[in-house]
Length: 183
Image (tube, rainbow, N blue to C red; front, side, top):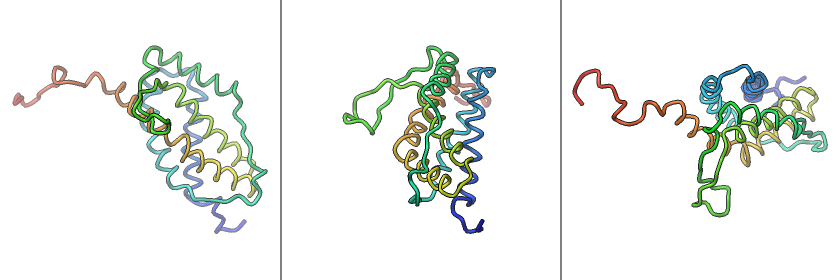
């Protein structure tokens, strides 16, 4: 293997590392508490987004080597687990510029957003693990395209809600502690 192989470059290895950590966490989320899942997502999603921006544009030589691995059943398992963990706090409203009427609020779901991101990341990792040049090219090209059109938006949509849930007890002046006694 050539050391100048872009499919084995630092940005790809780092993206795969973060994506793998995200997927592993969700694969083992059954034993985790809601707050722990939210704290993990709050920390890793910005990193995933950053790594997505650093993915190179690649035109796969053999596009037929591209594959998807996460089934509808796999997605449903992750979604249902997360929806059950988040309960009534799962749903929220967003304005999504991807839709035709970008000024009308849409109902969103933390579980759905995280399950969608999981699907794209898991497919990326699984295709990379085939460890052929054609598979790696397709994994990178697919991940980059999905970042631009899908999971990049999902991270943006869900991160505000997660931030709010983690920090809502600190909102407002009534909850503000003034250690210096000046307010």
